[in-house]
Image 1 (tube, rainbow, N blue to C red):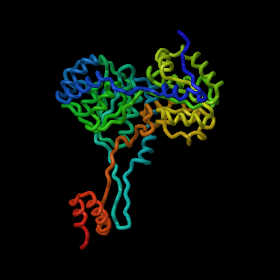
Image 2 (cartoon, helix red, strand yellow):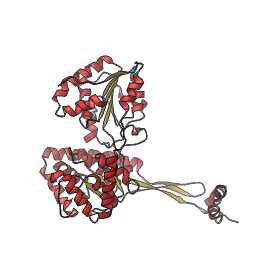
Image 3 (cartoon, helix red, strand yellow):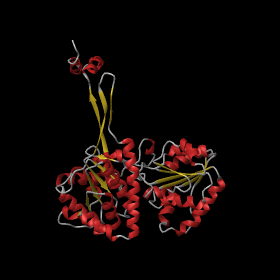
Image 4 (spheres, rainbow, N blue to C red):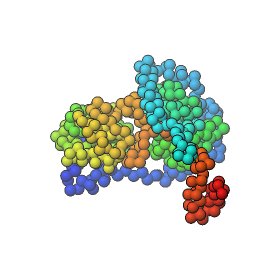
Length: 438
């Protein structure tokens, strides 16, 4: 196979900004044909319920059934799958689940509790935090199986106190992945259905005779799933619309080049549109990484996908120094950010925008994908500028608490009435003034 054509940029180059803009460009424009097809599927499932779900499951997944109930996986089936996988797989699933659960329990304690206080007039103000009643998690099941996605979506929902967790997973031609089913058992999924695509999102959002409607849909999927999630938002909540996977490595040259090359591969192997970028002030080290990439690439089972990803959207960028590398990282706002440095905590304070930050040479992004503990559902395509990883807070809602004392009403009533008259809303003003002592 021909040599890898991986672009290399230098921030000192006069055309760097233009080249950098081309590198970052990724069109999130929707495909009109997909959007129309998804709109038709959603409307059909909303109108015909189970019958439409069965029809689309047979058409798109090659899986025929007499009823949607026949597509439901029982708790016994999930348990049987758990018992059928190898002891090593069982141990790995349970260890990963324990770490993910422990992390999200601490997250809940730090940011997911109700609170209140009383001011000087005795008025109570606060916030009541309550879990969602029922959520749906979408687990991809087409090109590959993702038991890790089951853990990352179901466990924080469970920790947050969600009453029911409904999993949907496509099983093309009826082929069920034992690890996915076992992960559902370990993560405490309430019910699971072997349906996928836009029809599964529609069933979760609108409900059918068999699939209960949920309050929120989370989890990644293909273009049809992303379009469906976008369209049902408002009827239900969603976590995010995810784009291609991304990794950005900030390196000071202290990490073995082979390690960094493989870290770049770890995202490039996901998809031809995935993006892997290395930022480093040491041109000699970048040359070492390039040599490692050329040497290791032919050994990879997904060589063709990695090659297409690196040639299409990858880059090696020589920066003036690590400070500039951090500034460029903030412009990119990557999904995964590795600080592959001998002094990662020196640079971490400069990094403002990233889905997850992996500190130090031993912290490979792949550990975060599976078992470190923090959630691997992360904002992509620069949305880390304003979005956060999936967490327990995504499975909760907040209600304001207000209990105004008699004394407090005398103070607040005057303020509210003044502002209400200014807005021309006499009813609001009088409702406040009726409670004033005359």
